[in-house]
Length: 337
Ligand code: KG4
Ligand code: ZN
Image (tube, rainbow, N blue to C red; front, side, top):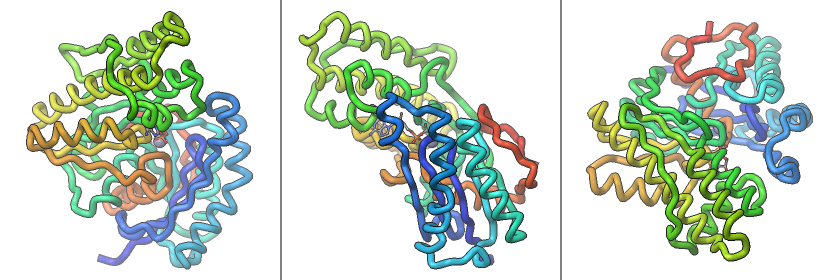
């Protein structure tokens, strides 16, 4: 089959990113301009500021991706961009840029689902990974257990009913005075702690759904009640342990339900070292193969978008240039034309 080289743009939240990927798995360049330093003074992402910064960065990010890959637009077969879910103003910057490049260079264009991108990050790190498998998508905005039936076919088996896992990490970290984004900081502090605080965990008998607001609220109440007496390292370890127990319990149920012995992790929280360690243990105990993306592909990037675009493209999917940004796009929605 002919090689397919894809240029992708990702701008759904606070990273302006452009990547060039060959045949869905080989990264030729992967440029990310993060706005974390700008947003951390506000304790979270400010949508309007994010959009303005995407506008400022996008030209240089795209130019840099082409230059690092030593390619020109003429060498690219397909232009793609995230079209949802995400912050609408932020999405529009990357999407409009990609559509503009596609129009000006007369190349085909394809809109990509951000979560499908997170899942596809695994194909870059693991050349041997093929569907079907169970994927746990855990990011700042999403918590889903997905049955990846095929490269472009997804079935949601469980979702959060309130906070996303990453959101809970970020809210807990704010209450203990850590900077945004809190996930990596809690990860680090928990390494020197023990899970000694008992926190409420929510399990649903009849579904693989999640609820993390109980754990989050219990941590916040504990911090207010104990004040300076609180052991921050132990608190972080207890929070991670409670969240991980709930995630793993549903994952094992999902494997049984779909008779699958492969689990992949995806999304920003899949960078969490405790979650990875516990998942590895679960894999060994139950003879389940565990995959996770390399660290730099866990959080938002455009290489994962190019990988998802490749599998969509070879499955015959395409988009027209009137594709709009869809902030609340659900996984499995067939909004593409
Ligand atoms: O996937 P992502 O970059 O953006 C979204 O699509 O939401 O995920 C960002 C989230 C943030 O909530 C951040 O705190 C969390 O991922 N995160 C982590 C870690 N690294 C990033 N959470 C726990 N442990 C980490 N090491
Ligand atoms: Zn993301």
